[in-house]
Amino acid sequence: MAEEKQFDIVIVGGGPGGLTAGMYGARANLRTVVLERYLPGGQIAITEEVEDYPGFEHISGAELAMKMTEHAKKFGLEIISDDVVQVVSEGDYRKVAIGAGGTRYVGKAMVVCTGGSAVHLNVPGEKEFSGKGVSYCAICDGAFFKNQIIAVVGGGDAAVEEAMFLTKFGSKVILIHRRDKLRAQKIIQERAFKNPKMEFIWDSVVEKISGEAKVSSLTLKNVKTGKTSILDAGALFVFVGFHPNTGMLPGEIKKTETGYIITDAKMETSLPGIFACGDIRDQLVRQVTNAVGDGTTAAMAAVYRIEKMGD
View 1: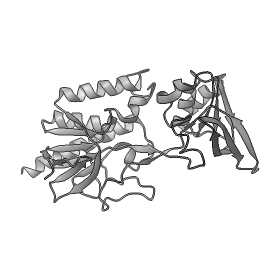
View 2: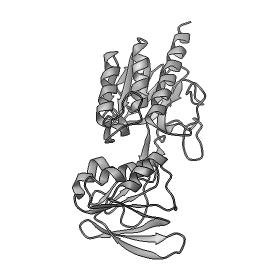
View 3: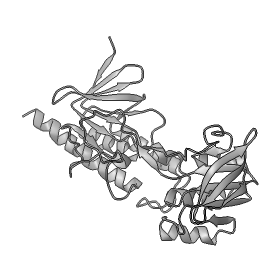
View 4: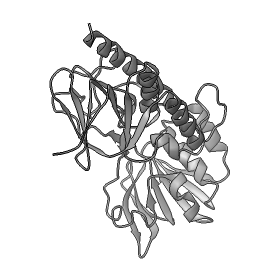
């Protein structure tokens, strides 16, 4: 029989939202656990610099993640490294997260903060050259491409910020965007346009990634003219969005057509006792500050629910 561990609040995902929820749950003197498959902090832990989190004009993502983790653990939060493969609801007051090894983490309430995964281009060569010039994390792999031409695909905040980070390594960074203008915040765009190492290719998409042992060139297509061209590049970093990691959740939880979880003002899903916060939730913007606010609301709503159970 699988091992079963009992908690008051089970939090699936250890990003900023999950750590905040964990802090508030533990602070309410409830036995609270965060289940995280990698290191606490989520995507922020591999972000070079954060400058839009109140109180910190400049702080590395890794340091901010560490501070959040340490703060939450001081209140008694337990953090366990496990990959949750399924979430089930067994009655009104048993919410169960099942780990990859079969361990069952049972809570009276649950907060799901599982973030998202990078969207792939799904073009020839992408899979073959993954880890050989194709990457989805600039801070992880940028240093491997010193003095090379680096291509970046995307037009949002992440794409532009990561492209600027890559200018620390590449001789040139070329941003490829399918439209004729960026979607990133204006202040981020301005910095990119002023960066002497940055170049831009507009109205274009990557159709093929080529090379031998590693990436050496990209086939681009202009979406307006239909013309194709070859771009010599030693690496391609892809930042075209992400999809929410909700596959482990019960089917009765309502989602949007694109898979984002629909919640009420308490961050509660359509399945009572299961709350959601951060990037997996259907909302206008997805920033660290959003996740932290969501985590606070979700945790306190879970606390109130558990308190009512004792009435």
